[in-house]
Every structure is written in structure tokens, then in C-alpha cells.
Length: 224
Image 1 (cartoon, rainbow, N blue to C red):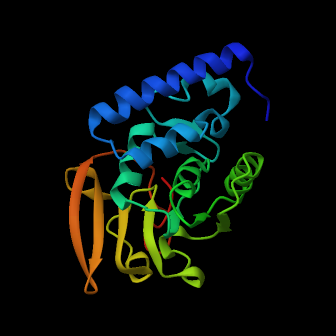
Image 2: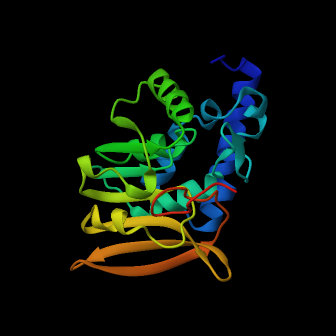
């Protein structure tokens, strides 16, 4: 991975500051620990070099395998929704670029991140290792089934839209834990937060979103 020039560093730093102030704080992502985590992770490292100038723009960006890196606001909103406090064991479903896992790793004890596209997982691992983040484990597999070998999880973040919360993910959630994921509804995709209380789901809806589909045994069966 090439390094930004001094001029690019200045421009990226200004864009990062603007993103934190206007895309996150102004729209309710105001948890200080979440803001610090997002400020600490260089988003440009997770996008192709031709897109560095858009790394902090308020939109999703395309990456390999027809996937996307979510806009900063959505990453912040989902992270704030599961509210990691430093001791949590977290599952990140849909590694993609690795950016969401990197943000979560600044706030949780450790992160398991699962991706069905092996080349994406490998690329994300290279970036994460270059940044010296050491509490992230990479898995290639069907994210809709979670990763039972390392369950239960205190928090689960899903970066792809499912017809409903996959039962396997809810089963792998610890009591009192939180899942945040986009769900297909008759009115389009909406972001859902589920808390597990006495083995039951307590659901809260956040906002309308647009994500790629969660493909797998408990998601969508095939790509479009």
C-alpha cells in the first residue's frame, strides 16, 4: 500500500475532522469513545488509492467483489448502537474492507470478523496487520451462520441486509448482548438493533439504509 503525500495527509486530516463534526456529531453519533475510535482509524487505508480523496465522504464506496465500505455515519451509528465498552467479545459479519472491524477493535476486547469472499478477507487482513491491530481474527465462511466456534458474543454487527435476523446469530448472542443489522422490510431496508433479554429479542429500529444482501444459508440464497 502506498503512503499518502504530505499534501494528501493534510487534506485527509481536514476531511476526517469535517466528517466527525458534520456527518457524525450533527446526526447524533456523539458517544465520545466511538468518535475517538473513528478518529483513530485511517479510513483511506481501507479504500482503493484512486478513492482516497473520497475516503471521508458521506457515502458508501465500492470495493472488490461487488461489495462496499459503508459511509462513516452508518459505521458510527452501528458501532454506537452495540455500545462496546472495552471488555466485549464481538462478531463482525461481512468483513469487506475491514474498516468496521478496525473501528470495533478500538472499543472491544477482541473481534472475530467473517467474510464469504476469501480475497476480501485476505486484503483486509493485510491492511489490519499493516496498521498493527492485533485483536482481530479473520474467518472465511457463511456470515449468516455466524461463527459458533467462538460464541457467545457480547455484540454482533452485520454489514449486509437480511430478510430477518438470522436465528444462528441470535443464538450466538450472549444474554444482554446486542445485534445491529439491516433488515429487509416491505418499505425497504431498515437498521435494527436487537438486545437479548431473558433469551428474548427486544427490537429497536434506527433508520432507513441501503446495504448489499447477506448471502448465505440464513440470508439471501443467491447474489442477484
